Image 1: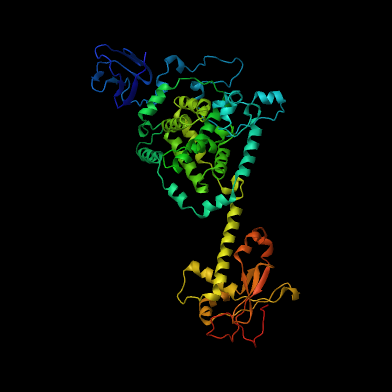
Image 2 (image 1 turned 90 degrees about the vertical axis):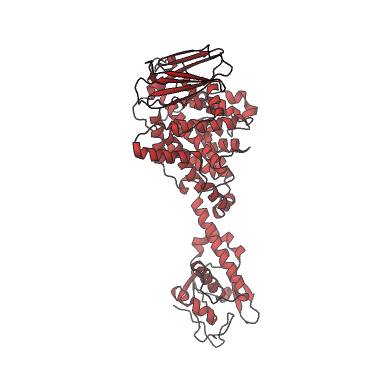
Length: 578
């Protein structure tokens, strides 16, 4: 028997089932429905569905057949008019036989209270997303090796040992079958620190035109989330907003191909499933946003590289450490490494979870397709994604809503990433400012200050440039005092513009020792000190220690008004201001 392609929709009073059965005889078909059971037979097609709501036979049911398209359309009345049938696009779950929906597990472990099926776990009780703490117990080596599990719900082990050649190109962790979870995390953190490139990060930090363009992209879930918020403002009803998410024919075909399963997960394993789901969705949202929805040959690499769940078989204790881990990897591995992308992707993931399991399932199906078309990333489908696609169809929307709220409450700062980003940015900005000062200072003897008033930003450059060009100092070998004396003169045109600034900043802070070089100005007859831009970079780490020497600037009263170069009256004396 063949399972035909089918689609379900609903209105206020009816459930509509559309079944595509090409080349079937319209005169030879049977339809049976009662309660939540629906069955259709038209040789060689057979379809059995377990519906999320009850239907009834009351004489108002209708059926039709489109010969050209080969589609049966059957309208079935709802037992309770107005009831919303949730999960009509979860095709794999609808194909499950009725007996698999029982809350009783098929195999039950005697003497434990943690084992639960979907029906038990998905009750109305509030799910606790806080970290579960247990007393420390030192385990033997054999006991540690026995706990080295991975995959969906940590249900798999020994797979990497059998597929070492294929998985070595997919995952970063070596020998996960014999590596405990704590050691995996230590190795991952060390690998991220070794991979972090400050130059790459600063390049994206200062030249962020491409990043800003990526941030403007609007993926499909943003539009759906906007519609959801508008509808919530009217109805105040929450749940799975399946009507806002549509599946393509290829996605529906893939849903029918999945083998329906029931997963026996304890409380800890079930929490890990939800946590890893966040981690995988974060990586997917980043890839979709960066490629603007058009996946390429690097898409599979990007998703698995940004997800520690997929490439390190990581386990999680709380939601915050998932976001921190994702932020670190965004700044270490992909092409675009910017903190704004971390925040934007985090918000995208919150929106997907708020849309419900239909939106989550659509993302998982896209990931499944990307991995399936990439060799050997398809192995990750067997370990994680296929099971997620089946499991999410049975998950309760209330749990995803609670997970979205827990993720929404997380706050992330650059300091929490542990990469010293703020210190790196501050040092880079300081170097940039000092290089700008050096360039202005070197161009001062050959360029005259314009008479027009500059912009506010130019005022700062003019101030720093004029201060550098008008500085002179005595020879350091003969100096015995802690403060150096500095006297400079300005042309009349420069003095009129910079006078107020020089009066406010009569004391300038400069570096002590080795930051200036002697340049004899042709025709001036004096020695000028000009900073070199290349000399600032090695001094970044010594900024706080060396900004201690105070130089006093005074402008001689008898300076010549028409001079265009830094000159000093030969009869004048250097009079430092105390």
